[in-house]
Length: 453
Image (cartoon, rainbow, N blue to C red; front, side):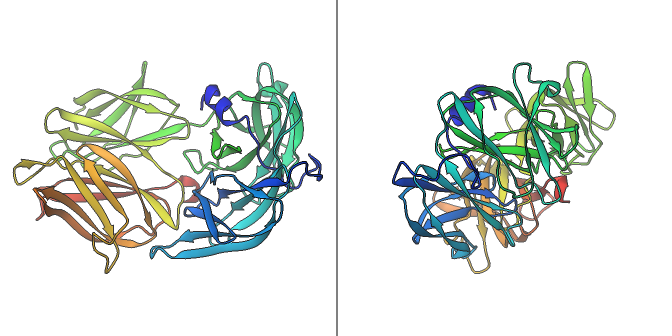
């Protein structure tokens, strides 16, 4: 994230776990409550106060920060199951304190999540900000945190604090300015995390959640900075790589291989048949020129641009555009080990039906006994050569791909027993296939970090 975005995101207040920073004497009769969802395999989790739903958060995100008068309130955390029934994860009493945010951190495995209440002063002194780190990365690892100013190199950084798993947060006052954050395992000088240079403003409180990145780096960590403007700023590890893989959906070209080139450096993949994914190629965050080759090494397509960010996993999908020939679509892969719900990236490569052009299709995910009209899991009007995400529950679905022709709904593909019950997320490609009775097919691929495989 750029510094300009960080400046918009960070001049705000955050979290502290009953630390010594700030007085218990309240100068205001109002405070706040907020939920940070740090449970890696959780569904969208909702915050209820006095039986009223306020807002919710996915993994690595926060709810809206809600204002209440100082008092004690009944609070619960709930999610919706596949039957649209509210399931209570936890309920508790929370006391709102003046000029503070009670930020509840949900962490760990969602089968038995841990809830920790953090009491956060809303502001700091002029010329200074409050800063602290909270470790939800894992009970087996403790961290040392260093801050660097000026040149921003680790050799000039000073030890700021240490963070044990779910331990009390050490919130400290620091002068406003630019900082680079370094993290090592406790007692080590080997850097496992380095942030970009970020500007932290005075009269604010900042806490970075140290959590597993669940991205391209096995065992990697990232920082989520929770702010009082109701969203998280993710600070990614500056030395983390990204990864690419490819799939060719054009049966006329098989087997094939691919390359990603920057300057004079050419990174090549293994050879695969059509509708098969290559192995991943690890690459630095950059823009690359992508090419596809036939079995003899002749270029079938060249100079397709793909840009890769740090910690990003992406797939290049090669397909035949009826008007423009061979083309490539880039799809970002979600590697989070979701268990209770899953993000499905649906890719539509269907061009025609019975000799007429198909501009878009509807995709329905239906449970047993559920009709296309009943389901809420719908990708509506997915254009040709386009992609869209749909979150589905941890269930087995019958999936319908429907084309509307002059008011008549035509089922292009119907596939039962599509299993979305494994950890991770999915890519679903819709395409033509002359070998099937319908003339179409679906290709389903699961995406998940190597950290949990």
